Image 1 (cartoon, rainbow, N blue to C red):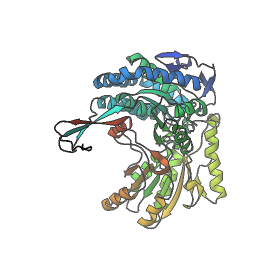
Image 2 (image 1 turned 60 degrees about the horizontal axis):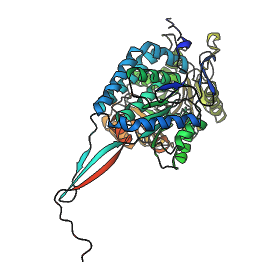
Image 3 (image 1 turned 45 degrees about the vertical axis):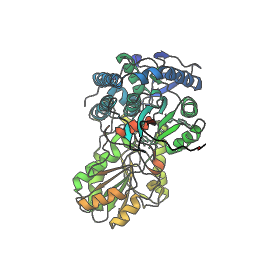
Length: 498
Ligand code: NAD
């Protein structure tokens, strides 16, 4: 066991970043930020309300023209400097993220922080690569299309991967020349506030990035309905996504939605079983299952179901639960008490409907973990009609069902309203491509699960939302096309003949 040092709470940034200055909330409210490992308050942060969002939007609006006019490579250079600063801050950021979210620090060190760095580097390099186009139109005309920034964008971040999602949203928005008002989740604001400090340290102009941590129904709602915000990028639940769309109607702002999921993960009879077991366990249990792309529905061919489950249950029981700051820990607590209760309520729902709990289904019986929001890795066998096969549980909870042929597997996989991540394990190339084509999903993983990269578009279909993060797609999301026509040699027929 190697327990890393707790963060020095006196060093944690707790205020709002508005117009390049760290300021108190206008109304003076505070939010207690809780450590999910022990239920204790880590720090109290300033609570942004509507008037603070208004101040942040005004600062972003004022900073907008100069930022958009900056040569694109200069914007890129600042993003690259930010990536370097985050890399240099890796140990602190990893401990801060582990303390606030409950992610095992080994994951923060190997995934969350490096992916955040990679994302800022990718978009730093992207800033001066976004090109317009020349369009073949009528003879005698030149038509070119430029991609222009939208202006002020509002970005609302959830609590499950706060550090990484901060980079997914800031990277493309800033590279494309927008200014930002970002609201981290009230539950996990600390790593985003730290990124704000690094943004200041590397020299972003004042007002380009504003960070206002606050509650959804006040600060979040104000971002969604603010008339000076041209676009909202939202990651969170489908229910709140709907509310954002309604609120956006006032000024018809662009909306990008990364919502919930209920990822199907299909294991065929010809799969490499050890690889499928390991990959499926990562797909659902990494980050305590609190991932929109979690492979939360295991769909097993009936011929291999028993052999798969024997290994899978044994692996699930061997996952090391513990203190997130211990480098040996593989699974930490869920991120909040309320969410812990919600996930456990699904164990009750599964049992009421006649599901069979194959493993877990409760808090671990360990005094050393009693203060934290832990749940054992939980495996439930339930037919496709049950609620746990349709509703997002968002915890270390996987629902298992079986199939006998490919058509049945596809029907089960496509049988929910969501369409975000999906996966399959098979050696049959033809089948792999057929399923890749027909799965109702924004992402398909074949013989792997939950791969993400800043160059590859990320997003969903159906009730998982619309729009894409990452890659060139994200740059298009954060810009709008302007079509310019020039008469270079056109004989325009007279419409009004006199
Ligand atoms: P949530 O919807 O409760 O909250 C997300 C964010 O929205 C928070 O910052 C919250 O303060 C804010 N918010 C809440 N009410 C609001 C309102 N009325 N107006 C504006 N903002 C409001 O989601 P959560 O519980 O933080 O996150 C979990 C959910 O996020 C899951 O459903 C998960 O699938 C989804 N998620 C989706 C993706 C994706 O990329 N598709 C990624 C991660 C999480």
